Amino acid sequence: MIERFEATSWARRIKVRHLESFLVLDEAGTLTGAAARLHMTQSAMSHWLAELESVVGTPLVLRGRKVQLTPAGHVLKRLAINVLGDIARTGREMNAVAEGRVPRLNVGSVWAGIAGGLPEAVSAFQIDHPDVAVAIHDGPFDNLLKGLETRAMDAVIGVLDARAHQPGLAHHVLFEDQVAIVIGQGSRHWERADSLGFADVLHGNWVMPPSGTLTRVQMDAFLIGQAASWLVPKAETASLIIMQALLHKGDYVGVCSGAMADYMVSLGLFKKIAVESGIHFGPITVVWKPEHVSATLLDFIHCLQVHAQGRAPTGA
Image (cartoon, rainbow, N blue to C red; front, top):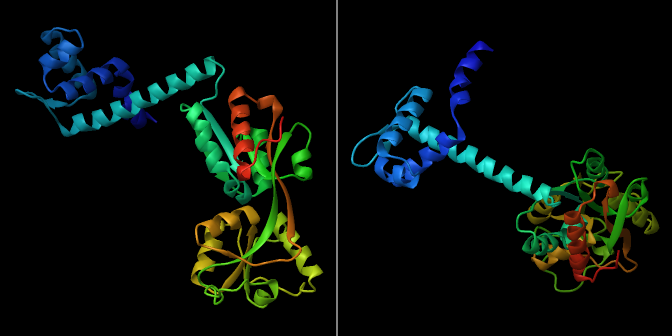
């Protein structure tokens, strides 16, 4: 503990003004130029620099016609940039809070929401709110909902079921989704020009979401209706990136959100398998806690409604 205190005791004597002036000196290149910018005399500037070097215990610049930073000077410059940057960002966030705005939003989403308009909504939202950072988190709906309780999440996008109707939660429906069956470029069927049906891929190597997830539950119900309950997946994953990699490299058949499948098809990465009756997934909704709501969050939710699958908002 004593060693740690001694290692940081010099920092306790450094002031913000020290760091600001040091960056001015580095930019000006001369004591005279820095003194002029700081409205100081050159002798006062020299005294200030000597004081700072005394605090850190080592020379920070090589004096000459133009000052040059020593290795220690470069280290202090990095510290100055980081500290002053953090102070500036904190100041902007403090101002935002004082004005009733939110400086940061944390949004969780299942695959369907990410493919169903979330990126477009974020882009549109930040045109009107350029000072608000949006952190996007993906994962299982249950895990994301827990973040609403701890305030780790401001809003969560997932399926409208009993979980979205828990006490203390509010929601808006964004769009209806389906479960899709897809293949990738690694499939032996990729080059076929005709439409592929369920029977064409039934005996293939399947990649499915883990048991218990809603997509898997709906897919298992569909298989029972098709008298194919015997089908066992070759691989299970909750990661879209892993499923995409498997479908790209190997002869696999995948199962995912219909919105995500449509997005991947638009990129030329997947082809959808035709299913006559469709596989219902459910309404995709945005969920939040009214007791934690802000005007900034409501603006973001409105953008989600506008850009969800390109449809107009359904109203409050």
